Amino acid sequence: MSSHPIRIGVQLQPQHADYAQIRDAVLRAEDKGVDVIFNWDHFYPLSGDPDGKHFECWTMLAAWAEQTERVEIGALVTCGGYRNPDLLADMSRTVDHISGGRLILGIGSGWFEKDYDNYGYDFTTAGKRLDLLGEYLPRIKSRFGELNPAPTRDIPVLIGGGGEKKTLRYVAEYANIWHVFGDLEALTRKSAILDGHCETVGRDAGLIERSTALPGSPEDGDAEALADLGFTLFTVGISGPDYDLTQLDAWLTWRDQRNG
Image 1 (cartoon, rainbow, N blue to C red):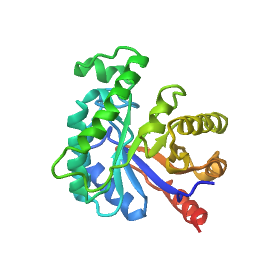
Image 2: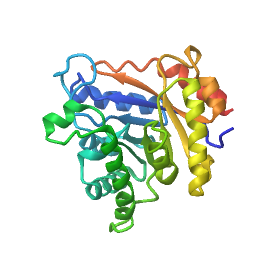
Image 3: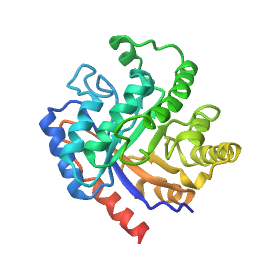
Image 4: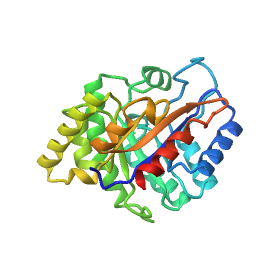
């Protein structure tokens, strides 16, 4: 059983909407009582019209940092290869200060080839993108220690991905939160592998908050079983333009019941 409380996040996918609609959704989500509001780090929509309206991740997070008062904010997840890691650390520190210490630095290796091609990044291979993430994580950590002013606290790092050899080793070494997709069987196996990596690097696996994204309501799938497995951060993805947040109600009720 995890020592972390159940938390509910919402990923407001910044696609097919005017920014006024996104701003309104952020306000409504915080008012509802979610714990974390995420966006994503892409340059084009991932569903619907592939050339529809879309906004950039980190500019938006700075605006959210000013708009919100309580929730944590972050990208689920930012692509490590899109920005120099020292610059990304500085951006994270800055947004963390703007928010008063509420940023989660979510990061992964990247996967959406259209982003890479149209913005001039080298897509290479999945293995090379993972290797690059492995090079960037210690640089980000080092840059945090050199910035003036320093971050408001140790900025929590969320690493997204389920690769059992590389990604989970990075999680064991660097992450405060691990975000992964999969069914109960897959996540049970990957959780055990992460525990093994933590033992190898000498880290308490219980310190890493385990996170996943589920559709529908808690009654529709494996939420209870995943919570029993140790997953405590559950995020619901919602797209524009309307950002219908009604499905969050069941998740927030379930959170409060689980947390007692």
